[in-house]
Image (tube, rainbow, N blue to C red; front, side):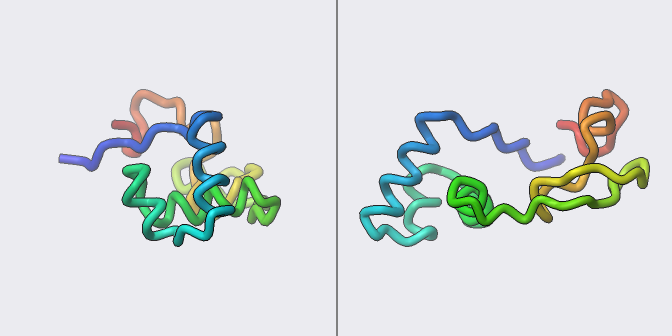
Length: 89
């Protein structure tokens, strides 16, 4: 049984995340409060604060190059949408 796929961040969650960060709340406490993984909070803060690790990477499924948002994003758009992908819920 696979772990549930995390949902995308909504605009409201982004706003709440930045408010928590501005108030000095630790990413660990933010993760607990928002029901997200700590790594997800750290990654989203990087994106929102402009410290994204966006670069070209190889897709773990088809091995083609694609622009990735960070080390957490390892499947190209084509493979992420495949019904036969082993990474789909």
